[in-house]
Image (spheres, rainbow, N blue to C red):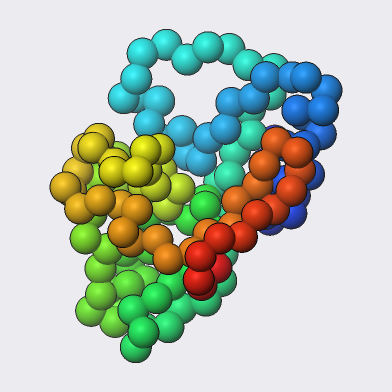
Length: 139
């Protein structure tokens, strides 16, 4: 399944969870090369179709993007304004922006030692109940 918006993602997650199906959530699946075997699931949902730049304020050093935006496209866009994200993630040529986000308060795995949570000032995320939740500032 390839939702193209946060609302579609929330609806898809809610529908699949309501049917008690197991879910594998991926972007470009670039991190699959980093781990051991992945348990099979009933449904695989990819955020790779969610690639929009929602808002970019170069003078404020802020950007809002969707989870499936390739990291390589983000870095090219920022470079046009002599900007960068201070990370060096593994598989950066294929990884999506969501793959850079920490799964714990401080992301110890791969690349830069900059705590990635410090780079996020706001976020919209989908829940298994099919809701969209907004937190922080710019989203």
